[in-house]
Amino acid sequence: MILRGAEANIINDTGGIDIPEHCLERLDYTMAGFHSIEEYRSSDIETNTRAMISVMGNPYVKIITHPGNPKYPVDYEAVVAAAKENSVALEINNSSFVATRHGSDSNCRRIAELVADSGSNIIIGSDAHISFDIGNCDEAIKLVNSAGIKEEQVLNADKERLFEFLGIEI
Ligand SMILES: [Zn+2]
Image (tube, rainbow, N blue to C red; front, side, top):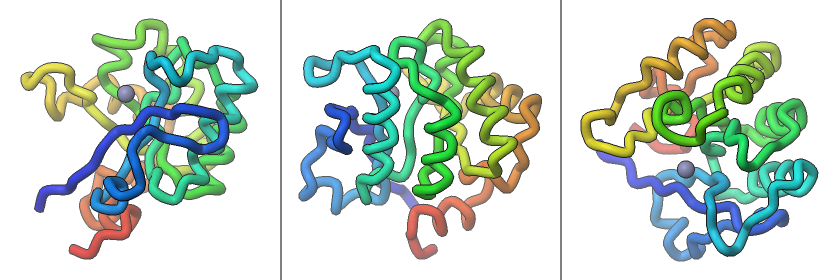
């Protein structure tokens, strides 16, 4: 089974993303995160936190991608608590440790520790920027294990768990 998903840009601090609803409703899942785009340039921690938490209220958004990006600092305690409350998964992104978003390491560690304490859910992603890295999650898995996140908190460690979370019937 192939799932159709997309990663959208967060474009404001009121829950907006840059994929129109008529496309979102045809996807199996949607992720959202901060990227360098014209529409959203803030690096103010309060605004970023408000934007990230607001987008969790968007009914199409199931996953927040690479929340440890140092270019878009957020209040990690608030974000992890809101993710739990909204049943949204935070992504631990392998590429953040090896290829992109340099300086993510300590932020991702903090997020992982908070997730371990809160019992909220994560997704592990390779975020491969080249075909050879698809499915390479080695660094992300190391962090997840060392932070004490339990296997049952990792949604994509189990197909049934993931599909249930996404609301997809197997
Ligand atoms: Zn991204």
